[in-house]
Length: 175
Ligand code: S3P
Image (cartoon, rainbow, N blue to C red; front, side, top):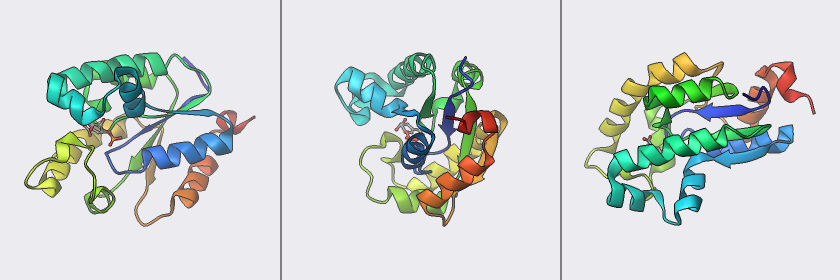
């Protein structure tokens, strides 16, 4: 368990990677993104993993990635939007650091993900409905996990990062 880690949870398109990188820079921590980590390890992208191994295969890789990345100390970790679905993952995340939930509306998600080709779960006739269903299922889990909940709508990433830093406990902002 590291008391110096910050973990970002929230739905796809909530800005976890962008905000995470800004936070890491400001707080002198290293930044990791579990999706990127999985892609690096497998050598293929996430849509390809879904195609070959199905969502279950991806979720197993995701659990492994979370387990490995939470062994690290003094990092900012952006997690995939679905990582909170497994109790096992929630347990690991809970004991691995301070958890920030980026609370985003479906409108904003759709806006951000308009041109996205990398989210297999959005390859559907009705992406809005898909995002609404996913959020209905996952939002209670994000809320339950979070030490800090930050509404992200209509805010610039830098402003949001400052707001988060402002609300972090002092032990996390110390150099
Ligand atoms: C997923 C979110 C994605 C990625 C995968 C599945 C989900 O991560 O892990 O496509 O189930 O919501 P981001 O939240 O970084 O987009």
